[in-house]
Length: 272
Image (cartoon, rainbow, N blue to C red; front, side, top):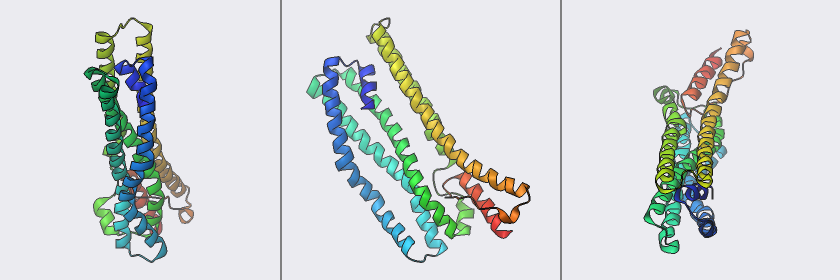
């Protein structure tokens, strides 16, 4: 439904069309959310869920826990890809219906297609972050039980690296925002009465929405990084105060470079 705002502003839908478009969007969302998504989620997570249940029930070796951790930390990326594909296909079906149901022009369909692809990207990143939180809760417990130290020393982390985190949360959203603004400029300068108040309002709505999304994604990666930074700072402050034997290890899921640094500090604490 939020994408409808972008489509309404970019493609120039009329008030008569918007109700029909929203009703069709609701139908697509219901099918995706309650029929397609549960099936695809089960295909991705069923085997991993079974292995996590076995891990909680039975004794495992460090090597077995390391293999499980690898699969667990790669799960958010798989879920994100699944969300992007499912969301894109559903949204593209929705947009394609504009032409044969509502007789919209090719230009409207094109602008709407670009909008839903960008929206699919934002949905992908959001799903990756939320699934990462769930996987991290299990990952910290697995690491706390002990993993293969040689494998950890060789790979350092098993999830999305810090470089890709910045790419997905900051750099690519900036590029997509520029694409959106270029579309806005072209749309409103060439095809609309740019001096009209309605065009300016649409420009303001899409600009603010894009900015909110970009800031929200930046905040998510900032918050995730600060969690590991605060954890390490607390341990180092305890060392600096001389309370070496009272230091509590900070949870680490080995999902990125920051968590690997915490893992190294925890290993040092165990030796003290």
